Length: 242
Image 1 (cartoon, rainbow, N blue to C red):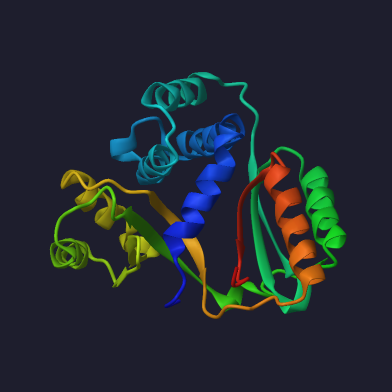
Image 2 (cartoon, rainbow, N blue to C red):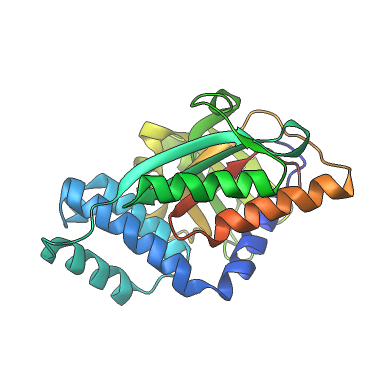
């Protein structure tokens, strides 16, 4: 992954999302609702909810909005039941794409996802067709503008807490963890007062695919934009070397 400025991509993503914060907060609210339903409304007793809250804070979701989402999920017995579904497929030039969604209508979501792939000259594949090209790991990004202490101190704190890798980029630090160690590492950084630009369990590509043809780039962007606009879609992972 060397040579890829991960935080540059994060900032680009955040800037893009500034105009659609309401939609982002709606998606995060849905994740909170599922976490509360599965493990209760107390984040201290529900590690998944605690991780979703951290993700929400990294996306600048206000604390009162988070609290309202938790209370609403805990108190609404008639709340919509969301199911987790995932899709895998191929974009232009063999790029790998994974889509994760929370939906109350799997037929609608499947149709929309298939449509997004088709309009970008790609296709949905069978489960497992591309996920083997990714590693599911915890990823924490720290903006250098918000952290002015020594990199070695941050690295030692992260590794002592259970992190598996530490990378320094031009504008950020990246901390990687095994999925099971993510919460412990994130909580150690939070306790130390270290601001996190991103903190979530994600799918990290093992290799990257370059797109040089303008039409391929256009089609890839079309697929990603359509998926981004879909209310059911929570996360999209791909190995395009942007």
